[in-house]
Amino acid sequence: MGYFARLFTLLFSILFSLFLVWFGLKSYGESLPASEFETELVKKLRSHEKPIVWQSWQSTPPPQFAHINAHFSKNLWLTRLEKDSLPLDNALKNLPSTSYILLHIDVKSPQALPALRSKMKEMNIWSRIVFCSRSDGILKDLRALEPEWTFCSGEIFMTRMLGLSSLGLQSLNRISADIFFIHLNQLKLKRDLLPLIKEAQRQNRLTFVGPVPQTSSTYPVDAWVIKN
Image 1 (cartoon, rainbow, N blue to C red):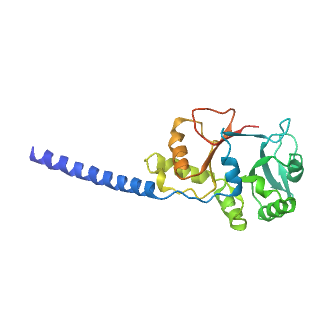
Image 2: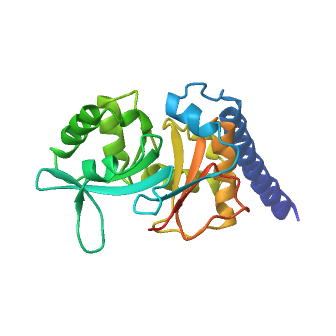
Image 3: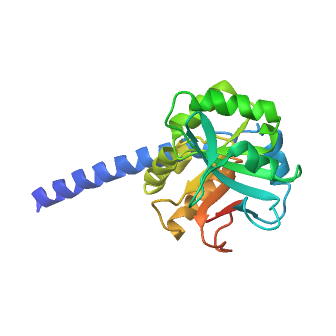
């Protein structure tokens, strides 16, 4: 009996120590203050009472909140279409001056970001654009060039949030991007995402989710990105 009592005491001590460490980390993360910085575009998007629905820029009539997928090829930024490609600047010019744009970029060339930066400044349209990508590195590099622009978080960051959320420690991951984007390219929309949305709200960050076929009232997000 003495052996089992000592074993039980040892196991209990280990588990209790782990709980104290977990509780300490959780409390520390939740005690960190929320960021108060917001770009002017984020402030405008936050003013909408209902969740924003980002639709394909090809919609008729042109949507107020337009979603565009773009890639860099042969020294040109092009929109992604099923059968053909259109220069990005042509797609942007076809939208009303009151439209906001969610621009999802795919970069494989070192010339892509300088070309995009030049095009956005030439058209003077960057203040109406949220720049998104699945690549955290691309977003980090572009933000280093233009810190005043508005950016989403990447897919690796979201994966890290999911891992910490499984331990209840999502508060340790500070959201430095202007908008927390939940990428659903490889995931399904499920209730496991609710703690991430709640944490983004606690950190004073807007949450975008997509691509999805339709919106859902189950998730209190700020915007939905609808599949083309």
